Amino acid sequence: MKTTLDIQDPLLAEVRKIAARDGETLRSLVEQGLRKVVAERSAKARPFRLRDASVGTPGAPSAYENLSWEEKRALMYEGRGG
Image 1 (cartoon, rainbow, N blue to C red):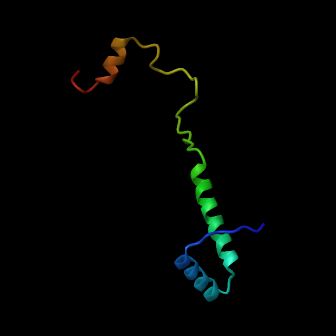
Image 2 (tube, one colour; image 1 turned 45 degrees about the vertical axis):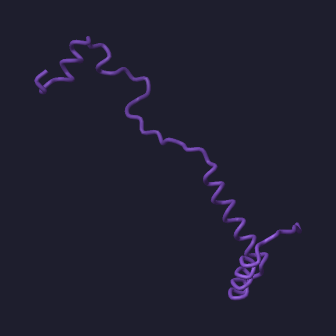
Image 3 (cartoon, helix red, strand yellow; image 1 turned 90 degrees about the vertical axis):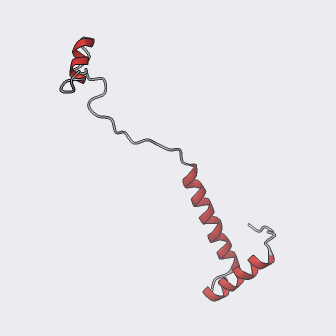
């Protein structure tokens, strides 16, 4: 597909020098630059996903759930003078 771009003269001159030095066309450098921007921004657009770092079996009963508050408190402060 053909399109028209307005590129600042100093930038265009620099890109032409790089293209000539590397034996590439201006078109190929523009396409490379656009691909790089698309790849970078696509990576940023992915939603953050927290890895599963859960411990134990989901829904498994806790060894502490049937204890009274006094028993739980005693376990928490055990060896701490409480």
